[in-house]
Length: 203
Image (cartoon, one colour):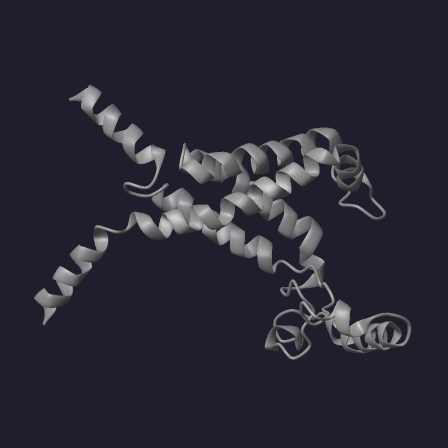
């Protein structure tokens, strides 16, 4: 029985680059889009980074915005191809940590306000604005039903209220941590072939 399981695990190891590839393919467009959006609106991004009242209140906002853009835009491209994956993951991990801490932490875990979630009941993340979202959502629907084209507006899905919690930032952080530890993946990344070339030159 154990030998059968061992053979199964050994066969699985032949494809251990695939999960890392899928993580990279999931993360890359998210990161590239985030970086590109910040780049296109650099002045607004910098202002948001630096403002103490309605922004993040970070020092040196132009520099911080430039670093965030570089990490997400260039890092996303490197992640996509599996180039310098472990090194690229480090500034991205820092970016996700800073984002979670400064922009999302005060909103709890949930990205979308869902009062029915056990993560919104105050056990782990006390978040009164999630509980208040029920009334706000219902009021918004009533206004749209009275003054707008509700059936058309909701034809692509139901309305939600953004909570902007740490859910996405934490998820991306965990995925980047996996890439930091395991690299870009066997057979599926440029790193794999570069490592092979380096090993050949050393032998």
